Every structure is written in structure tokens, then in C-alpha cells.
Length: 267
Image (cartoon, rainbow, N blue to C red; front, side, top):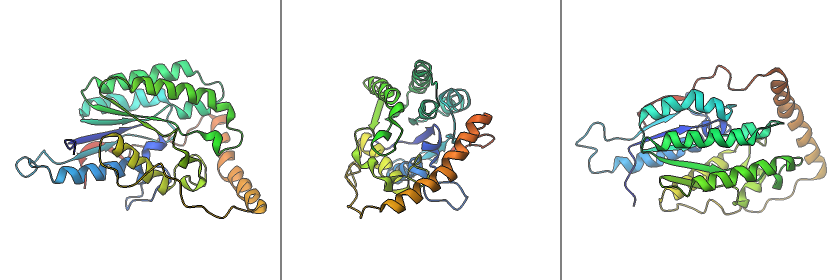
């Protein structure tokens, strides 16, 4: 078993905030990052130095906020994250930029690389992610694929450097299954979050609790009428408001604080 981490900071957008996972008693979403923190805290509770050192327990912060672009992640989260000096950092960002027409992918890569370098300079192990492939489950998403493939190659290149780890979601076909996604089709369902958490732990060298890439059991296909009703509900409930925010320059994360802004003991 690898040496247990003593501290973990999660940086990013709604993916890392945990959107659409189970709700916690405090009203926040749980999310894959919380699930990773829970597993790492359990490891740390059995570490031999915990009894001797009050600071030897596991600490966790989650600075991610929904809707953030990569520039906002850099400007609003990086200084706090680097100051915490955590041993482990997860960094996910840039997909909100890619979703917007006219995305400057060169600028996104430059900012993501800057974030990764600043976090790695603290001595932390930095976990990065490739995006899932939306074209295998979302009609009309083919326009996004060139940028997603560029980001995938960029992240994988970063992952070849010492101190970086990459969780490859793109190559996991289980994410083609809509049951791993929430009703809005953009955020993970609880099962999706569970699988991403397991992917992170596996990438960090932890023994696999289950095969997170494995497909779900087959389900009866939805009828045409049901699919049409689902599509209409999705367009009205999720796509329309998303377009409205873009047109008015608003974001779902405007004015929203991080759910765990301080590096505190995780229980």
C-alpha cells in the first residue's frame, strides 16, 4: 500500500464540486472528490503516527465552484490552493470553456498548464483528468470533439512529467451510459461520481475495490415516445436556462462560495 496522504485539495468547477451527486446534511453535493477524501482519510486513520501527532490526521479542502472557466479557476482558487501546501491536489478545468462557441483552446491549454505547474511547484502530487467523449451519448456534440481531443493530448503530455497522474475518462466507454449522468446530461449521477472516485484512487496506486470502467448491466431500451419526452424536458429545464445565462453573461457559480474553503480535518 502506498504511503497515506495527510492532506488533499480539490480545485476546479462543477465536476469537482460534485454537482448532482447525493446531497450532504449541510445541503452541499457529495461528489467524487469527497468520496476520494473519505477513502484517504480512512487510510490515514490507521497510520502509525496518528496517535503521536495531533496534526497527523487527514485534512481536506474543496475549492471547486460550478460554472468556473479555467481563467477563473486560476485567478480565484490557485493562490489559496498553493498556500495550503497539501500533499495531493486534483485539478480539473477547461471543459466549461470548450462548451462555449469561439473557445480559444490555445489560451485554455496555456492556463491549465500554468495551474498545473503552480500546483506541482508546491511539491504536491497533481491529479489531472481527460474528459469523457460526449459524442458517444449526446447528439450535436461533434463540434466539441476537436477541442476535447486537443485537451486530452495536452493533459496526457503533462501526465508524463514527474509528480503528475492522469485519470483517463475518455477511454472508459461506461461513461457512454446515460445512467452515469444526471438529468441535465452534463453532470455525473451518483454512480458516475462513484466511478470517478475509484478511478482516482486506482491512479494513485490504491487496490481496486471494483472495475470502475466496467459497463452497467443491460437495461431495457426506452421507447421512442419516452425518449422524445425526456429530450423535451431536458431542453426546457436545462438547455434553455444554460443558453439564457450565456446570453446575459451570468454563471451558475456567480456569488457561490466553495463548499470546503479551508484545509480542515475530514470526518
